[in-house]
Structure formats: C-alpha cells, structure tokens
Image (cartoon, rainbow, N blue to C red):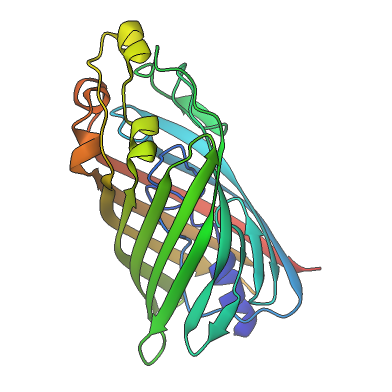
Length: 285
C-alpha cells in the first residue's frame, strides 16, 4: 500500500488550469499535482509519463490549444524533488504534518506567433502578434505546507518566489486542497489563488508604447495584486504499484488588474479553463 501511495503522488498534476508545469499561463498555482496521502518513498525514485492537456493558449486567452507535456520526476525519499511540474526543491522541514524549504521553478515563455508553450501540438492563438516573445523565466523562493485532519486529508500550501530571466517580478501562490478515496480512486479538490507584483503583471498582461504601436492596443500598465483565483480537481486511478492514470481539470478567473488590460479586454477573456489526462510509471533507481 505504501508503494501505491507513492505512485499516486507521482502522477502528473499539470496544474489543473494554471499549471506549475505548463506555465504558458503566467499565473502558475502552487504545486497542483494530484494529491493523496503523504508520501514516504525510500531512496531514489524516478517517474516518467505523459499528459495531453486542452486549455487556453496563453494566460488570458480566449483561444484554445492542445499540448502534450512530459512527466519527468526524480525524488530522494521525501526530501529532495526535481520535476518539470514542481521544480527543484528541498523539504528542509518535514515533521508533524509540516513541510517547508527552498524551491526553484521554471516558467515557460510565450511567443507571438501562436501563444503556445514548447509542447503545443494543435490550436493556438494569433492574438499576441506584435506583442513580442517572452523567454523562459526562473523563479526562486520558498514554500510552506501543512497537512491537517485525522487522515491528513487537508493540504494547505503557500509559496513566494522572485523571477529572473523572463521576468523579475514577485509571485505568490496559495492552495487549499481536500483529498480522499472512493474505492480505488483517489480524488482531490480545492481552491487556489495567485498574487504578483506590478513587474510581473506588466510583463505578462501589460501593453507598453512599442507594443501599442505594433498592435493598435491601448497602453496598459496593470499594478500588482490578484492575478487569478479558481478551483482545481483531480482523480487518480492506480493500475498496480508502479502505474497510474490521472484526470484533472480546473477553472480560474483573472483578477481585476490583468482583466482590465487592453490585451485581455480586446483580445482575450477573464475566464480560463483546462482539462487533461496523465499517465505515469514509477521505478526505483
């Protein structure tokens, strides 16, 4: 049973709408992998998998796209983790239901041709033409997480990170999640929200004078504040001790500052959604 639980937490959780993985949507939520009981792996483990995701082409887009994301994870016990979705982190504090430590994430950029991530295979958007490309960004900071309840079914998590490279803003994510079991299926559901500084907002949602001249959009300089808020959910079904499949979905709403940008008002929309299906295989090293 312990090994099954490890698999459940290793299944791809691309972030249900603002994926910590996808990051084509700048409002990446706190780690939004499908969550079950706390994991207690022994030694080094690796997870490989894949997940097609259908959702918005870029953060604030009204156009949709289909992407196929890889699931590559490396864990050492319940201490170190490295993955496309969750970044590189260390559970420096790990006791009594508490976890805390440093974390570094990658945020994929966007391009003005189709708006999509490097993993886009169909669909996309031409609404960013003239806005210019945004390169990949790193984000370094810290997290704190607490498990609550008799079976630790409640999970509360917060992260704060500062960007470098593609943006130099400050981003904060909060997540509350309830998980349980129905037969052989693990489910998780809960709200989430992202806040960010003005630098972040203007990078991904603003329109400067040069962009306005290229696109015909009005100059917009959104301030810091609420980026988005929403709800995510996932279902996980293990096949055996190594293999599992997950279905995940979510819907989010942009905050007042990004939604008020001319880019979103004229070429996008405030409501965002995504749905996906992930398969993963875990093995020891």
